[in-house]
Image 1 (spheres, rainbow, N blue to C red):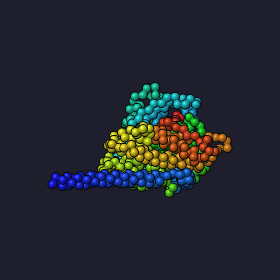
Image 2 (image 1 turned 180 degrees about the vertical axis):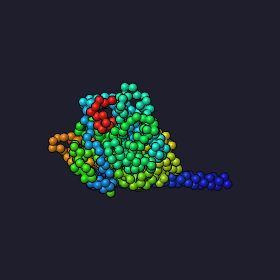
Image 3 (image 1 turned 180 degrees about the horizontal axis):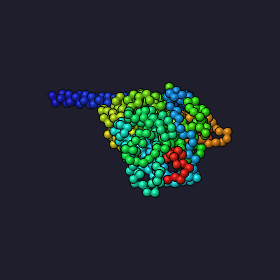
Image 4 (image 1 turned 90 degrees about the vertical axis):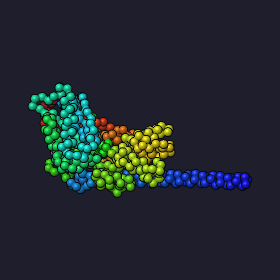
Length: 498
């Protein structure tokens, strides 16, 4: 009996062990299968995001075609090619005290710039920065402009009395408004649409400078809007002030745009006599560029469909800081859903749109620690995902690289398209340099993105042409540029300034 019991126990024990082994093997197979699925998703995303040189050159050519169409007639192209009414960029002779409001996205700045004239440059500048409360981004026009004016009033109230204007003169301001505007003069223009997460319906079609002036009157601020520009034209003006070879400006920040100096005779839609300078600055609004050559994925299509402006700003949604982190989140969410990448449960925070901002993506992408501890801490702090393996963290970094590389290479192809339209994509006979001024947090702070853009530009231009094209960072160019254009268009230009 005892022997028989012993045999039963051995059999039962062996069966249990075999069952446990089978369970372990099954789990390993499941884990292996899930990992294989995760890798397949990553591979597919990488393939669909590829930007070979030939594709980028096709995109540059497609952009040139759209530029010609946009210059020919209003509505002729998805890119607006807006006439800026800036036909003279700063020379260095501007003198006096001027202000700028720079509304470029979720933050805005108030600046005061003191210019010395006679090539003395920017003597002194001060600024303050504030963020736009989310409620005002989708509220009423009056609320937004009142809020901005209150910040401007506080800035003026705290300044040195020596900046007070003489009797009979008003302070003058350049307003950098980085949203599509149909310009009607140097200091007036109607809002075409909002971008970058803003949606203020009652402002569309209104003169943005007039709306700001009404807020000045409501809040008792004595100020004249002397110039209305967008951040890209401000950057072009600021860049030109310090480097006479600057002829193109590109913004890579929350959103993206480009502006350049066009020959006035090459603008069929330009009405009236040609400007004396023979030139006109064009605000491209290239964020709305669209082409069949753009490497769109299901994540981009989903982001676009669920955005505030579906079908619009497709190029911007691939390359700018507003969206790169969100593309990454969407890929991670699919990994979590279809491959249980972060465990059996999909992390709830990962379902929240725009929770993963591009600065966080940049920090993870730049993580150089051996155990990728920055990636680990960001996943834990923002998405509440703990206990990630090094293997998983490496996948996250690889996804950051795919998203950033695609964006940077597309931005480079856009720059090449602009240079091509200007005849500046080949060496100049007179040896002239071509300088592109860049600004925006994405370009300034996302090192991997910036370096990839620069390498791609050289790749596309080739060994012969690349040495003649230079990229310069025009730090705070948009705000300073607006103040410079206020000076260029001052009511008191030529008389004793403030």
